[in-house]
Amino acid sequence: MKYIIAIIQPHKLEEVKAALEAVEVHLITVSNVLGRGRQKGFTEVYRGSREVGLLKKIKVETAVNEDFLESAVNAIETSCRTGKPGDGKIFVIDMAECVRIGTGERGPVAIG
Image (cartoon, rainbow, N blue to C red):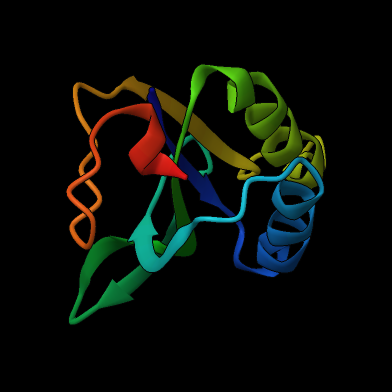
């Protein structure tokens, strides 16, 4: 079992959702987040001091079984790649356990 976290450009969300649906990954959680990476955000002057601002991003999270890992990562990667700085990042984390609260199922069967 793996947990995938992708930080993407906001305008790519619909493409990512469609790409994940195409590889049969239907369960996702989406959050609005702020951050900066190599683009280093934007710089503005506020009350005489230089401040580095954070950029709007979208965080997409999903849990998958091993059989779906590569197809899910590839779907996110290809749907978000523009070749420009700020395309995003994908993190893959080992998941120790998953529990479906409604049924009490555990492990890979609980992911869905």
